[in-house]
Length: 411
Image 1: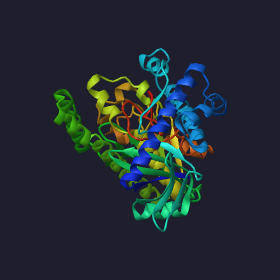
Image 2: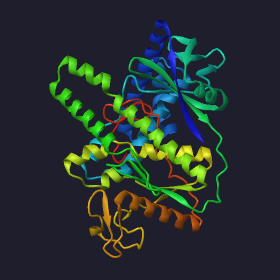
Image 3: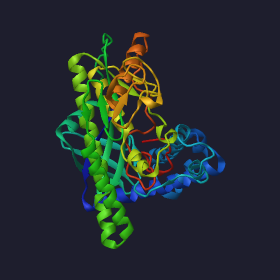
Image 4: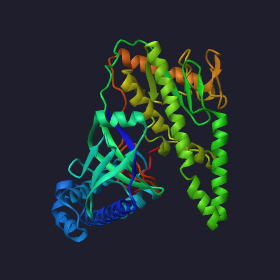
């Protein structure tokens, strides 16, 4: 199983200047390669390399490996864009047209991939030796949490991404972590219903996060709108300081929810049932006040956290079709739009059962997962989108390589 470990680099001023020069050159080259790929409609790595490799090396003085990675990350960015457009907006929508009418542009601080020929790790000294335009930069110090350092030294394999964010340098390394043996003897599942008012509700009747969390999200959104409207230098400084606060808070809560869900099912010997919400943003129609609430929480991130933690623990995860889970009675199976009396209340028009709406939905998810499992469907999660969890901050939406492109239908 592939996981990423992020370490913070502690470069000297000279080392930081060399890293910045190299990162800017790589992203300038990637933007040019992207324009060539767009004009000639060549999005495959080897085909695009024939038209750009020599020019990238000569014009930006990049090494052979760096030039190849620049071309490859450009192709990866177009692959990501294509997958996101396919999962999200309709071809006739304005958002879709904006995404395809011009080439992808890379931010100067967008992440740059490094392989083992360009980057070597010295774990005991906690330093790295990294390629730059000024030559090989040795003894660049780094730091990380103790558990991340242990995972890095044991399981690191493959490429690492160099990125610059908020005045700090980071390396995101890929680790091949062994999975626990999947428990195929489970009979019961724990359904997890994801929602807006209640972030996660389980079939055991447990509601995690909820109104208090949403009040905090509304407060942050209101403050952000006021600062944006004020548009003074001090307001911009405060916006810049707070821009990642909500994302960090949401990520932390998602980790806690996922850890709790997986720990409980592992203790009781059950599996986890989730809804397959791919493309939900493009399908769901909401009033304008509700749209910001829907788009402000990373439901896909929560699902991915649950999935990878479950794989580490050997817990099976089954994704089910979410259609009519909120309108179906978990007791008798009757489907009626009128069953959903309100956001929080479910009342079956057939058998008369009254229950919490999200709890009823999570029970429907559990029943569908158990039926799939009995039929021999042992699939865990659907394939993750390209470059999952390796973004570098965004102006619109950003791929792992720092490309700016529309990402409709993603969370």
